[in-house]
Image (tube, rainbow, N blue to C red; front, top):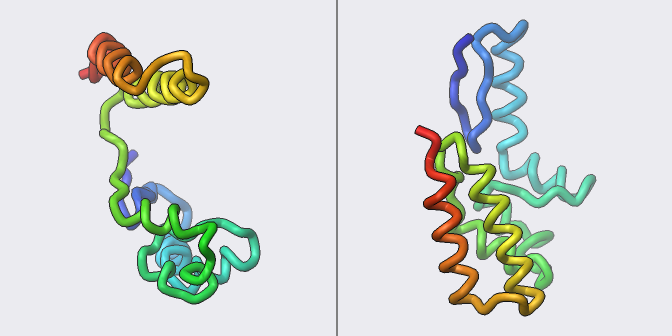
Length: 121
């Protein structure tokens, strides 16, 4: 079974019953206009940078942080153990938030846990 990569990390199996329709759907869903309408309908935040220029999103101060963060986002590392490292990060962030660890302690702990988990390669 082979996968073809496409926009926003979505893949489509070559063996899909109707890969052309799948590609059309993915292309449609990643269009800024579609994402804006989807936000209006279901409050799903767009992943398209240009969708954030629309007044519906750009004019909402509560969403500004997410729109700004989107400018520097990256896909997670493609390593088998990333889910474990991410879970450790979530747990340690919670400990920092609750005052159980300082930021420096949390970062040191996360680094040590990530190194012990490894990349799985």
